[in-house]
Length: 129
Image (cartoon, rainbow, N blue to C red; front, side, top):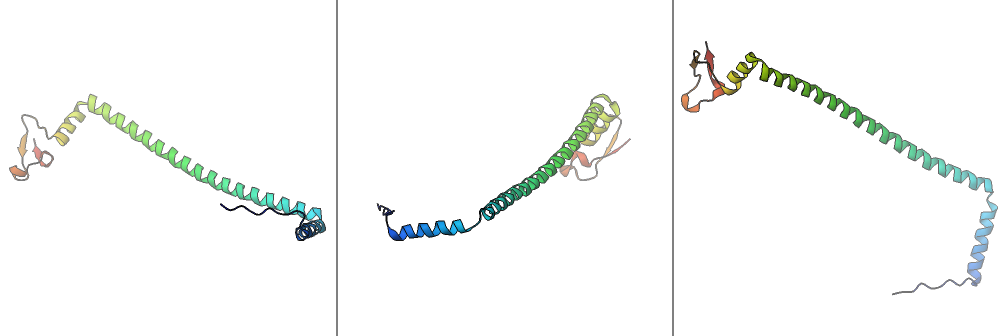
C-alpha cells in the first residue's frame, strides 16, 4: 500500500503557482465567466430539450401504432362475434360449416371421391345432390 505524499503548503514553488493562478483568474473579467456559464447552461438545456422531443416523437408514434392495432383487433373481435352468433343460430351457416369443415353429408347426398380411398381427406370430397 502506497501513501500519497503530503503537499507542503509552505513550499515556495507551490505558493508561487497559486499566486499565478489567482492573478490569471483575476485578469479575466467576471462578465466573461458569466457568459461562459450561461453558454454552458444553454448548451446543456438545448441538448436535453432535443433529446426529450425525440423521445416524445417516438412515444407518440408507438401510441398511434398501438391505437391502430387495438382498433384492428376490436374490428376482428366484432367480426368473430358475428360469425359465432351466425354459427350458433343460423341453420344454413351451421350446415355449410358442417359440410365444408367436417365433411358431413345428408343421407340423400351422393358422395363422389376425387382421389384414392387410402389417401382420403374429408376436405377433398366432392359433394353432389
